[in-house]
Image (cartoon, rainbow, N blue to C red; front, side):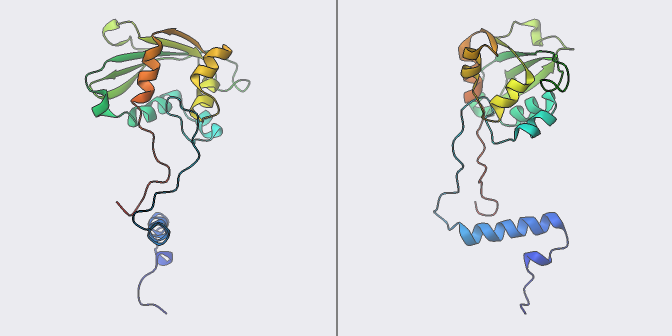
Length: 185
């Protein structure tokens, strides 16, 4: 029997999980070896490996806040960008959540701020681009099942404004590495 405490003996579940993951990382990923990578997915704003059922459970505000968390502030610099998202109303349960929501995303001063329709657009300025779509279409793009260009071509997304605005927005989002090292730098 060893006199060293093992990760299996940790009393707290989260601490036990951290310790076990750290031990696995140190055991299986030697310094200088690349981390495990998942297959690439279609590029779209915040393309991720989120399951469609998880995305459907999130409120629209939560999705936009997660995008705000991933904005690369230094890369944004002094750029100012307004994107308006108009979600179509649909009977709940038939085509996802019955949102009928309108959101304006303001990208300015290195930060992304979502504004719900109940507030006017900042400085009452017109958006650089407006997207009209069903919330389920946004979920499909975010899960990597499709892309905005494919959905625009299919007619499920109506796009008005500067096409460069959506491309610029996408390039300013950091793509997280799902296999990031927990213990090693």
